Image (cartoon, each protein chain N blue to C red):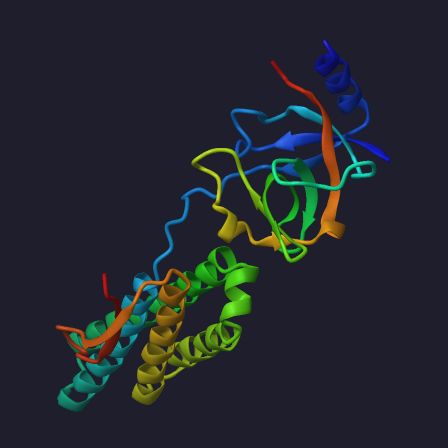
Length: 94
Length: 166
C-alpha cells in the first residue's frame, strides 16, 4: 500500500527537488482533491509526479509548480485509476 | 537524516522514480518551419523542372545545380516530417486530440506525401504536401484559439499559405 518514490526533474520546484524521496499511498480514507500531489501513470508520458490542478467530470488535470513546467493543457488529463499514490511524506534532499 | 538513510537503501535496492521534468524548450511550437520546408520542396521541384527544360549540354554546371536542388529537396523533406512529428507528438495531448481527431490522418498524410516528394520529382505531390501542412497549421492554431488566414506567399512558388491572423 505504501510506496517509496524518487523525484526526477525540476518541474515541482520549489516544493520538491530532483532526487527527493516521497512516501506515497493509494488514496483510501480521503478521496483525491485539488492541491494533492500525486504520482500517476500518465497514458502518454509514463510515471509522473504533479499536483492536481482541477477535477471535472472524472477527468483530473495536473500541473507542475513552476514556470518551466508544461502547462496543464499540454500535460492533458488522467483518470482516478491512473493515480499510483498521493504524497503522505516528503524526504527532502536538503 | 532520513533522506540519507533512504538514499543508502536506494543505492542497494533501486527505488522507483517518477518524472517531474519540464519540457524545455518550453511551449515553443509553431508549424511555420514545416510550412517553409514544404514550400521549399515545391520550389526545388520547380527549379529541377526548369533546369531540365532549359538544359543544353548536361555539363558539370547542370549536374552541380541538379545535385544541389535534389539535396535541398531531400533535406527539407526530412525537416518537414520532423517538425510535424514534434508538434503532433509533443504539443498535442488528449484535449487537443479529442477536439481535433482528424489531426492523426492529417499528420499521417504529411508523412506519406513528404516521402513521395523525396522519392520523386512530382509537382502535384509537392502542391498536395503544402496543402496538407496548411491543414495541419489551421488545426494547430485552432487549438490555441488563434484565427488564421490564407494568403499567397510573396515569393516563389507563390502558392496559398496559412498564416496566423494575429
